[in-house]
Image (cartoon, rainbow, N blue to C red; front, side, top):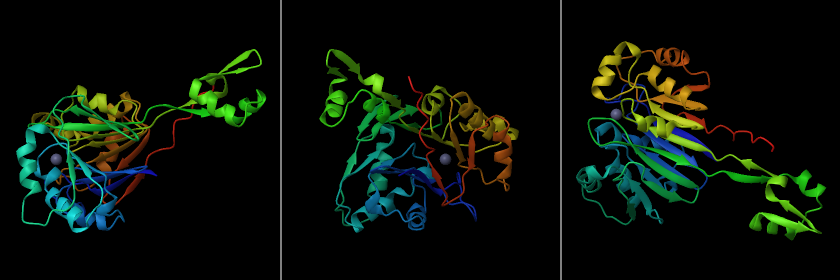
Length: 307
Ligand SMILES: [Zn+2]
């Protein structure tokens, strides 16, 4: 199962219909919580994801709307006696904030946190499902966006295998060694398989336009990106280190993104349709103006092209 579960979509201050930020990524056996703002614990309750499901927490930066849900979430891990270590990533420069949030109040700590701060642009963390990569973003405080990159795989073509008469243990040997000798004829793996394109997820927030935004968005199957403002506030957005819906959509279009999720909306705009209309002028793919408690599937794999 690969999907995004949206916990909250408001920047800065929550509204009647939008909780503070918070996002869950379910990706095979990883369940990653991104930027838990206030109220994330209760929002999670509505999604069916439990504290025990969590494997990892990623924080982009230490502004309150992205991290004030940490104390409750961290204490909940212990309350529920989560048996496995939960990895935590955040900008290393914010280590003092993290230490205070982690021990914001008294609790009986039983859960294990595997704390691995990000201290370099391009830092990579190897996961069973691929690579988690952090890229520096442009915001008044140290901020990193994240992307998850699954390596390309290989899909065997049964009709080609049977045309060569390859079956049983020979298939395993072909996969392991990359070729198979068949009565004087060598069959390469490429002749009986196609590339299975790896999938990519990117999480970009909060930032003005910069190289890191493009590096993260590149060929993302699913891009979650902040869209705090509309073009009418472009000057303000640039000044305070945020994106407009139009900018986010142009990044997505130029980067070959398939599903674009806009979120982190300023409370000044009452009608979410305006974000849709502005983004649609630049991006023709699947477009989601995120709502709280919405689930967005990672689109099916790109179709591999036979060789
Ligand atoms: Zn924010």
